[in-house]
Length: 567
Image (cartoon, rainbow, N blue to C red; front, side, top):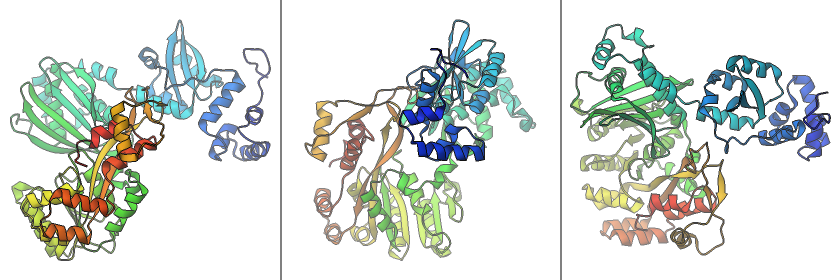
């Protein structure tokens, strides 16, 4: 029997788990029976049977092997170690090189007793391997986080041909044979890394002396790479070809679309170019097709808000509007809404600019101003196609607003979005666009106003005391109650921001008879808001502070997202 460093025999994993109280003797016997049948490791069986978490298994192995458990949230993975082990090897065996100490490489593994893998790593790295223990899920996240494309991108950029030559090459008839050029590989790496980092947008920005690459992650832009300006022309040319743009046009803005696969996922990319002082900049909007399947209960609605909104969706006619600024998730909410409607019995038609996600069994039309297809003309055309439900991507002008209202009035359920700060603001935005108050009162079923706020990183959550201003803002909404506040202290997984991912904050306004009468009588926004609050309207700021109380976000995020609203 192998012995740990202190010389005593290693106890069996089952004994350690029972002695530490992580499982009972009965659970151990049951798991051993399953293990004998399936031939799997005991730990795998216990996790599969929900008797143990991966963290508990790692802790027990740490005790069994007398080996420290490495917390990858706190340890920095060193690039020089990372370069010695290919990503595919790390993924296959769930391990990550942590550091080089002297002539040894420290490797964090789920099974540091696997001699065969350790020998393979030593052959690959030409170094001694010091195995260390880690939690499987932490190692997998660390692989995604640390195997970045930066160094590979730099290598590819150095292989670029001069810009003029590359442009001619990209325009050659044999374009299909050029998938392995340094330009193409660099672009693939940039997009692949953006998808891995959960970026919603990729910015390629020419500066005076460098090409700046930035990713928008959780609503915030982060520098991702800095390339020489010699990379600018070949990258933009390649992007234009992929997106079906005119490579000879540099002064006028252009739009295009790209469809690619990243890690077996279908990704659509919306590309836009515009001329700046130092050359064309490109913005890529990254659209993961899996998000088209998102459900309403995953957007961040509170149970009460979700119940109210789902009641609105049961309406057979009328208008349901989503309000908020750019980037507040309006389109996602619209898509999630029509996603749960019956497509077999209902004729659902949409007109969008652009179509971000494609849906099965839904008729989607793209706005095309050159062909005379606008939101208003598209709506008018829909009326000849026996629709039940209409989705208008955005109400921007009076003609579209009035057409949407008339469609709702004639027995159709109409969904759309409006740029407005809050739910009552949506009603008055329609009035500003020239819609008569009686039409608004007759057709609006309800309005959802929303924002996106960042979630506290679950890997580095800690208690903290907010500023006096933040506490006062919290108490204004929730009252002077005792509450523990949390924030993220920053770790490897959240890139030291303290936040990971986003959630929605929603304000659900349901049209009441009192508000209908007030609209027809042209009451002010303040009067209608007061009536809506009396009717049970729960403000966005209150919903945001509820998420603070639940430890989902911080007071500063709520204040930043919805503080300016006149509530």
